[in-house]
Image (tube, rainbow, N blue to C red; front, side, top):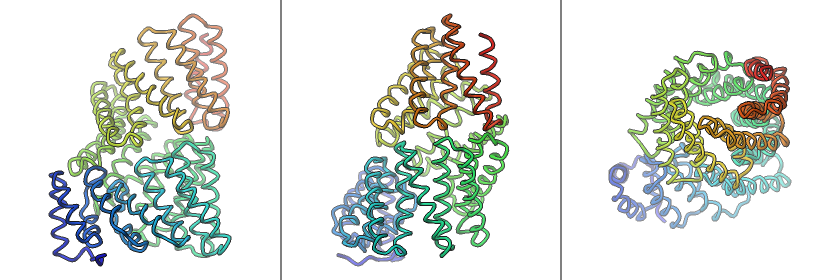
Length: 536
């Protein structure tokens, strides 16, 4: 085995930079690069990592093949892993190959627990969620065994393993289990912070943000807000002591706090914290645009959503437009890595354009978003089919606004079928999306004059939301109320006004309960639902 060289060894570094650039512009040269790497993998792989600009694709596959075939020690796996790009969307298959070798080569349970945790993260990054969950669960189990032998030594490992496992549970829609798991992680980190504030405050902040997300999924918005506010408070303390190290963390925490404030109907407060997040992201981009521009683009989308919620639709559109411009620049420099960023930004632009009455522009953005998601789905269906389905649903709304009802119905039906397939494979993760898309389908069918079919779709949506609410009422009360109102409208349109009144009454009662908890968030829907009920 060759001895690893540092990336400042100019001869090899120059060779690898040249070959990597060639591979980027001419994929047929990738095999030549792989052949060179095989001659001294521990020298050339780190240099290739440093020069890499690719996400998934042939370049990544070639490096992954090399990483799989060379015999690495556990220590060599660790060294290579630390040299990988920080962005998990860069060289995802290569990173996964290294973690798989690490799991196979280590003969130490403590090292194996860490290797399993890394492998789970990398499986998640390529959309292999079920395998990620199994692997992170194995890491937790191993850490619990280690804790029995030496609690103080392995408590941080258990906290980290629980944090990863909770994220994998959430990605598969197992939100109740995710909440219990991340709550345990938070409790351990709280204990650890009392003995070593410097080391454990950052992961405690991350765990609190994950806790906030799990609480939000469970409809416990007040508790979620409390957790997110605590995380931001910790981040501010970290920034005060080391601004350059922790500013990205604060920007991310503020982004999450904005979402929690929005869920609680506190849109003006949400606007203030998201604006602060955008300001921080701009400062970070000024220093390191390649690393921080994607996060700025994403935060601008959140800013647009909050501006829209407070009625500032023109400014919301400007934020969405800037996000798309940034994403187009990113795609121009690295299409493969940033296509998904652009697809998401275009979908957001479509929604913001629709709000200001720019129907044609909204439609163009939505159509481009769908095209990009279709292309991405061919490469990695597990990761991108849910995004395609959501984009098709949005496209249906844009087509409807332009009175292209038959096309709107067709793409909404496609979205429903995709979500049906996704729900069949993972009920918890995709049942809510299917229920919501059935609601849209009912509207599209009604627009096409197919009133009975519209009623059937609306009734199926209600049934789906009832099933979800039966296991978690707090999380799905608002969705169920909206679906009930939709059925009431469909029944009214076919002359069944008495039945419509029953559904409207149930919707009003749910909205009254929601309004009692979150007045700002539900005053408008309560008023409109009462108005519809009274019209019957």
